[in-house]
Length: 73
Length: 290
Image (tube, rainbow over all chains, first blue to last red; front, top):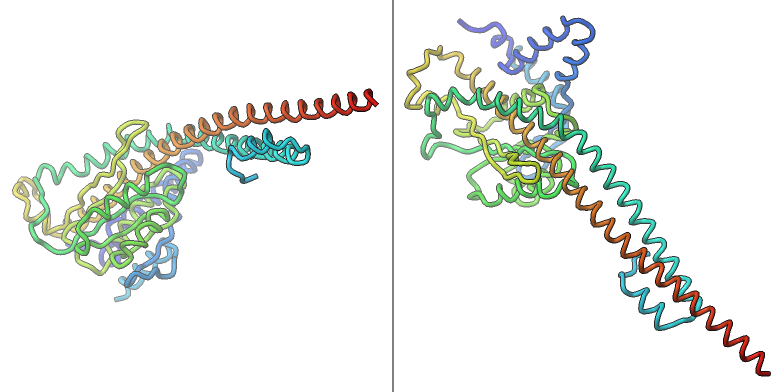
């Protein structure tokens, strides 16, 4: 059996993150606010090639782009 | 303001010319003031770190049991790193902020001690990036910023693990380097191993598990995220407690300097007053004799 999310180009971690987000959003108002804080992610990263630092970019955007590419291919 | 400590004293005692003494008095006062300000800042930072420490330690304990449970699979399977296989990837878990003692340089030193050339590096945190880019810029593959502002979340770890999985290189072994929390005042660099599918497949006790081939990459990705989360949380707790200690020491030193300068300031003021009195008396005596 191939997983549907794998066919859509997601990694397992991404799949988990999406599932966790759905659960968090379906919570009641008060626990939801506390839970959503745990799901926040604000990282930037840069690729290095040959000892030079590349352009810093947002991790969330870059990940989304990578999934989109994989899904279309 | 920035003259070396003992200079004003010698000047004050050796040359009782009033203009110079007043200047040094004001200098000492200025230094006192700036040291007091520094003490205030370090004290505040210490209090902030102390309040954050409890939360960071709780997160660390939880993440540790979480990560250990996640690694139990590999322990039971007795997974070992395959001999002589492929490249190694080192994930260095530090953070963005300094002023916390040797947290970051301890990790960098660990990396520098390794045999050069046979591993790639992923850095989490600006400080370790700055240190490692000087010596290991060729080995650097990815660097992350924005780590360690708050208690790390699992979403952070997942995003990082995703980026690492997407790296083009095929790594036989991933080692996650972090600061192991020993107690409130000590920590040491340690590593968590994250194994590749081949290593897990080749482990001696692999047959005690019944797994589908397809789930293995998932397990690897998930285990990588778990281990990174563990390392991030433990590193965060170390950083906060190290910052608390560093700021505690800094406040103590500032307090010592303040008492020292207070005494110096009082002495100099006394000397100035005595000098003025002598001048007045000699002046009065001279005019009385005439």
